[in-house]
Amino acid sequence: MLRAGQSGAGSAGEAAMALDRRWPLALARGAVPVALGLLLWVAIAGGEQERQQTLKGQPGADAGSLAQRRRHNELIMAALREAAETDDNVAHRAVPWRK
Image 1 (tube, one colour):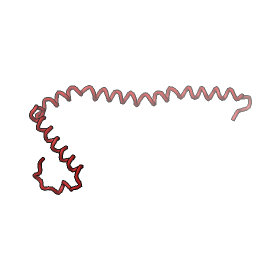
Image 2: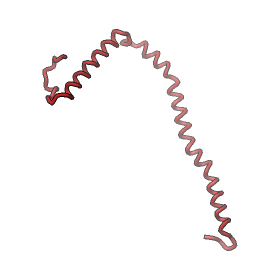
Image 3: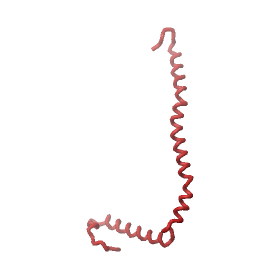
Image 4: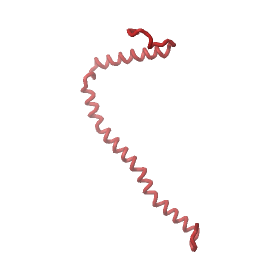
């Protein structure tokens, strides 16, 4: 709605000015979460090498334990594969069953 003495072109210019004033606020609202996420990522990723060193020093990280764990995982995957291929209920089998 135009006031007396205003032309239509002037109010369109005012709308553009109002839009221009909102741009910095919109950019800040979008940039702040991105900056916070980046800071958190840097903070978490900074301790990654320390975490890797700590994991290497834990018991169970030697080659023998890793091989035993791999073998155990292979047996579990084989049992799951067999259960998926059969119509029998493998949960009702006797406990000491091995491949």
